[in-house]
Structure formats: C-alpha cells, structure tokens
Image 1 (cartoon, rainbow, N blue to C red):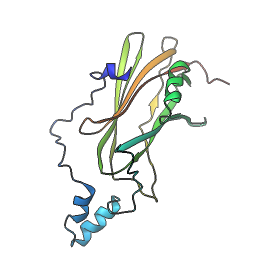
Image 2 (tube, rainbow, N blue to C red):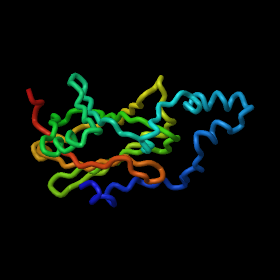
Image 3 (cartoon, rainbow, N blue to C red):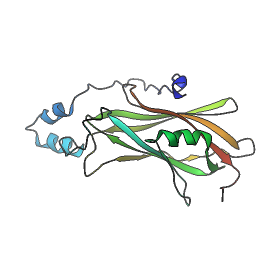
Image 4 (tube, rainbow, N blue to C red):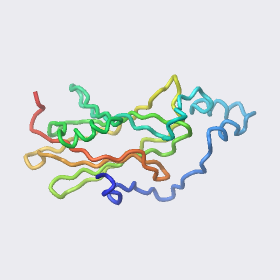
Length: 198
C-alpha cells in the first residue's frame, strides 16, 4: 500500500523556500482592483475566468492520468481515475525496452482555489535497491472552459540497460502540494525488457 512509504516519498526541502500566504480566488480578484497591470496578470493566471469547478466535488486537484512517451512508440496512458486500472497495472506491468529514452506526463484538473507547488514523487525499487525521483509540476489556477485540463511533461529519462537491469520494478508514486497535502498515492510496476514486445 502506498501509505506504507510516507517517509520514502517525502518531498525534498529547498533551503530558504517558504510557502507563501494562502489566498482565496475572491481575495485575489479583489486585490488591487484598480491596478490595470495586476488585472491583466490575474487574467493570465485564470483568476476571474469562467472556471469549471464542480461544487459537489471538494477536491482541489484531480489527477486524471499518468503517461509514458517514447519517440516512435504509442503512448502508454494509465487512467488514474479508475482504481481497477491502477490495480491492473500492479498485476500486469507495462514493458519498456532497456536503454529507451522516455518522458512521463501527467494530466490533471484544478478546481475551487489556486493550487500551489504540485509535485510528483516516485520511488522505484528492484532487488532491494531503490531510487527516488521528484518532479515539480508547478502552481495552477482552477481550470476553465478554454483550458479544461492541464498537462505537464516531465524531463526525459533513460531506462536502465544490461542483463542485470532487466526485470520487474516496483514503483510507488505520490502527488502532493507545498502544504504536503496528498492528492493521489498508488503502487504500480513495470518491466524493463531486452526489446519492445511485438
């Protein structure tokens, strides 16, 4: 279970960084209402735009999917809204060719308020060895009709290679913000193989 890995998945702390004061959308809208340049800046953030928040859903951030892009190959998309799809990924890991250059991407929706400092933290383990990655996704205003979802592509990575690197890897992933509020945590796995499956 992902909750068993809380210490392993704690985000890294940036020395000197302090989380800013939280404000509601209404507070931002009324901030310096007569300042034209500030009004334009707020519009660029989506503050005051036609948001698509669902009043019956209290979540601030809804993680929709996690994907794997490899040039020349179809994307592998994990539907994170579907608990059965996540459970299936543990039992039936996807396969990636050793040494392949890949990029992960996430799609998500923000609603109700501004989301500050969304991060993706992942710990991958094989045969008792583990490696932790952290990706800063960023801060976002609530989605609008013009921008119903956000997509963030992560830095490119290279899959391990060599006979000892092949096999099944267990992963634990977590999405959380600057306040350490967790939006999604899940266990999954993938196989590093000699060649792409046909």
